[in-house]
Image (tube, rainbow, N blue to C red; front, side, top):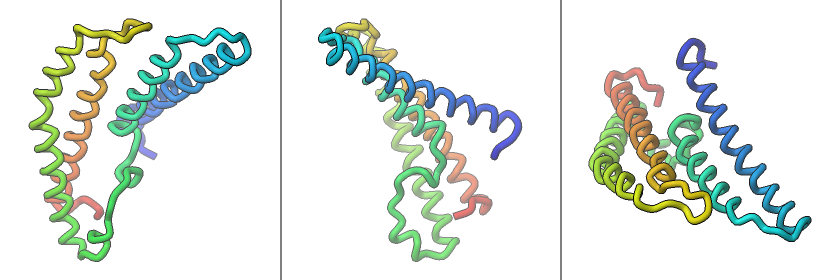
Length: 158
C-alpha cells in the first residue's frame, strides 16, 4: 500500500471509480423498476449509464488499474532474460507514448469540435462526454514514459 500523497491520490481515484460504478448500477436498477414495476420506462437512464460506463472504463484504465491488472500477451516475454525484457519495456513504452502523442492533438481537436452536439435526452455536450479520453491518453503516456525511463535506468522490475 502506497503512503503519502501518491497513496492518497490513488485512493481518491479508486473512490471516483467506485462512484461511477455505483451510479451505473443504481441508474440501471432505477430503469428496471421504472420499466417493469411502474410500466413507465425512463429514457435518460440509458444515456446516464452509457456516460458513467465510458467514464469508468477510461478513468479506471488511466488511474486505478496497475500494470499487472492490464491484459498482456507475454508468451514471448516469458522466455526472455531480464535484460531483453527491459529492452522490450523501453521499446513498447516509446511506441505507446509516440502513438498516443501523435494522436493527441487531433483527438483534442475532435473533442472540441463535438461541443456542437449533445446527447438526446440529458443534453450533455459530447465534448464533455468524450473528454475523459484525453485524460486517459495523457495518463497512459505519462505511465509508459515513466515505465520506459525506469526500464532504461534498470530499476524497473520486469
